[in-house]
Length: 310
Image (cartoon, rainbow, N blue to C red; front, side, top):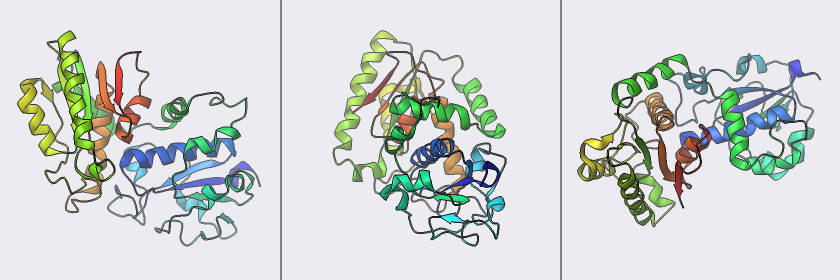
């Protein structure tokens, strides 16, 4: 078997956008370490699926393809697949979560099948021992490994880059210094019962920042209408925000719920907010949020310009 028929198919990880992207990032690293060509297919089980989820890859609605191949190139009769639950007829279908790789990492690296299939997020930490000295990620810290992958592979579709730049020029360019602030609300409280107490810490950080930069603007990213309104009352016209889909119901997830809203638009919203945050001079987020971690990894922040609340 040669590299021309040796692939890694990265399927959907049915979680929030940047959790799904972290899954992609880890598998792109595996593709490099196993000398396989990566192919993405976010199908019907993606929270950000296309309008034709059994036909169109949602990942490439937002980002340029990670290789010159698509899932259709992998559906060959003579190809073999790992794990054995996959075959040429079900690659584009939602499948049960496949924890085979997590249970036995060496199988991933020793597999001789034409197509490795991954629909489960496995942390990069599991793969560090497999990084050889001649690989660019050798010796890098956890976030820097992701930063290497993000920079190499995550290239926005031109229409998205244009939307982000248009918003920046109209709403942010002339308002520096700008403090980016990402505050999670709604469903995150299920994971962190003390979320409201953690969110109260933002006020302290923001007020300290404004003491040093009293004329600063605040670019606010949040999935909560209530948080947005609260911060408008607190900071008035300092607040900059996009028209992203939000909810005032703390029991409903924007990305897992609100079924009447476009899945594609939800993806666009979170990407725009994330990349606009990287245009800020300083940033305050949370180390328990994949959005904040993505913002950390998408930019080489100068020391002291980014704070992640724990």
